[in-house]
Length: 249
Image (cartoon, rainbow, N blue to C red; front, top):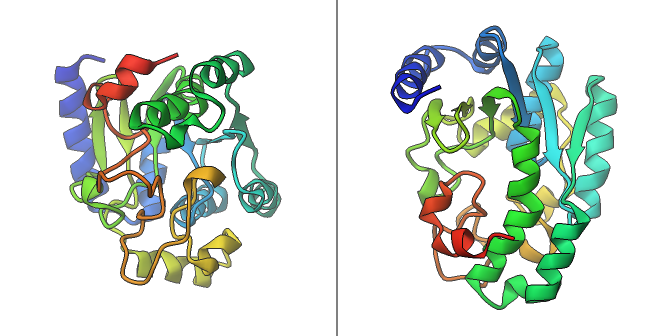
């Protein structure tokens, strides 16, 4: 898919998705043909999407990036979610040789020392597994919401991902956190118990802390960095992260 046709298709799809509810948005994408992949971090937004996929029995592959450094609560939730919805969540792990190469260059926990080292770790534990998870996919479904951070304030329902040659679908783009919580309560959706302990956004254990009252939802991610728009690289072009581009392993 070229950028020209991809952008046009994404815009037309964006307009259609804006008129539908969550189940309708997911069903529309699932019915378009081609492989649709939903990547879940097991956070509360992603659990809402998984619940909708399971309830509607949609033909969407559900996958997660098992980075090897997730909280135990997150790992346990994978099994609980599979059991509740009768689905398989495919785990994609980092390759050991990539982890070894990272540790040799930066140290196992070198991500605390520089932005370059942190992006390199995300590259090994997230970006490379994501590339394998999205092989052959036409549509990539995510739990991105406009209210999560300033970097995500303009999130559309559909956008063309030129680097990966597919269309990214963000079916919860216009949902706020109160709507998310209401859906969870109304549909008995299993969620990570860490949300109740002040962790609205949960990633790898060494890189996530609870937030303080009044802080943005993602303030607990990579909190030692100064950039308010910090990301791991999954949802921003690699060209926008020079340190990631220069330190890829």
